[in-house]
Image 1 (cartoon, rainbow, N blue to C red):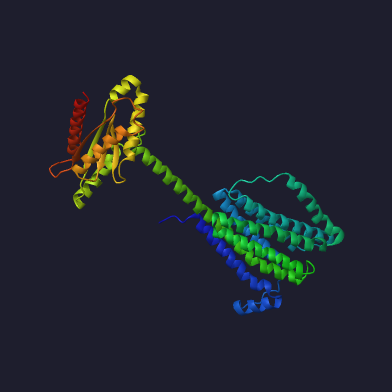
Image 2: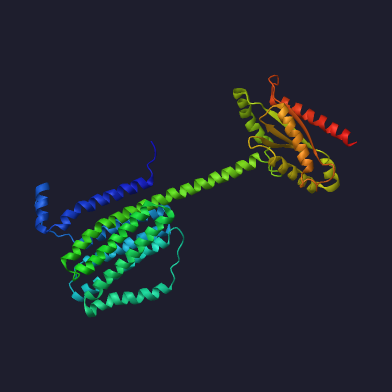
Length: 431
């Protein structure tokens, strides 16, 4: 039985959280009497009238989401996921602090100011998370010089001026932070093309709109409209959590694709190294052994003629003995470059060994012989070859594969013999 991937369980847990929280919304949004009627009709019981605080519901959901993201962080070890975790944890703490009932009024106001500040820091964590993808991010220490006075204002001003001193400013600052984070994720979509980033960006912008709605329509923190806005923002918060899960899995997929491309590139380079002669850039005998079977099948199946040009460099040994092996290597490179630039794309050039080259042609013997003569003449006239040592030229023998040949080695031997005949004839002409 195949092993179930770990991320599949995380998606199942996320779905359970969404269903659980969504099923609680009707009870939480309805008055106490309506909750009793619903419970009585569906379950046959009459519960005690208990009103669910929306901040407690959002805080509990934030802690669950932070736990799921923390599991993803242990699996992926990405900095932006850690900022997500911090953002959700701070959001949960903010909601839980604001949801509690305090006996002392000044303590309640202080708690509300701290909750607003934590909500602002939570929004800033989402902004930083967008900057931290996909590179590492260092937060300057100078940020502390801004955060500390802001914290002092949110913590102390409610004690002197009441909670309204941080109510509208807090929600506006949180809305600004979430809007900045949402825009950053939407801009990220243009670079990484991930649906999860788009989902997170739109969700954060929607949540930012709910905070602006609170500032416009809700006069005080204790007004009923605040609970309505929190219930409205619960849905985009959950969608943002799912978008973060999706974004993580898409990032994993992109990483796998990049890794596969690098592996394919490395395999291609290794393949070229294996089948290529490192000095001349021509194919080697290993590649000849790989393709000759396929070429023979094409010859037999489609009746395509096959010929071989066997090429030897004249006076190459003298070049090595007199000028050294470096000069000999330069001769080999120039000859190889000449041959590669004067063949068709369908033909193959092989370095057969030492100063010998082999060209595999898809043509008859007459055409192969004509092309061999053309190569000799063009090589002698080539501007690049005039700087080579005197009397360095090409001896070429050609042969066509015929039905009476048992193996391709017989074809190569025949071309080799004709190459030596050409070399002897050239010497007689030179003398």
